[in-house]
Length: 145
Image 1 (cartoon, rainbow, N blue to C red):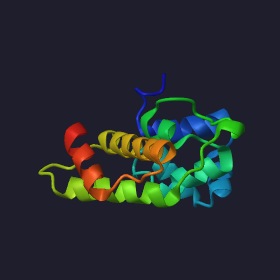
Image 2: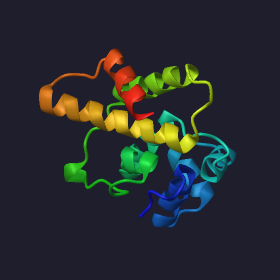
Image 3: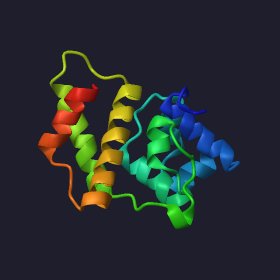
Image 4: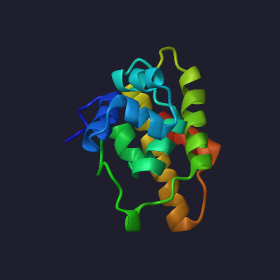
């Protein structure tokens, strides 16, 4: 169960799963070795671009990466399309929400909020053909934060 691992340790689990060195995975993801090492050590937050690169290169489930829930690798025939625009909206909503708080969210809490909102937004889109409005995102964030 990887939910108990901090998100940066899940980045290291991906590398270990594919038996890659830090240099090799950094190259495959288009990162400098130092930048990759900072993400794996948890010294820098994982940017949306890295979540997308891990999905594109290795089919890593973004929800698993951010929350530890579900499978690490999506099966190709069942792999949902990562909606980069939606993910950007969700990250922006969480960051706007965080600026209104007295205390910054922990990386783990922030990543769980992003994962939850993204998952719910995708579900709403798939089931009802609707998108989660910014107002609905704010309401959800207030309920779960």
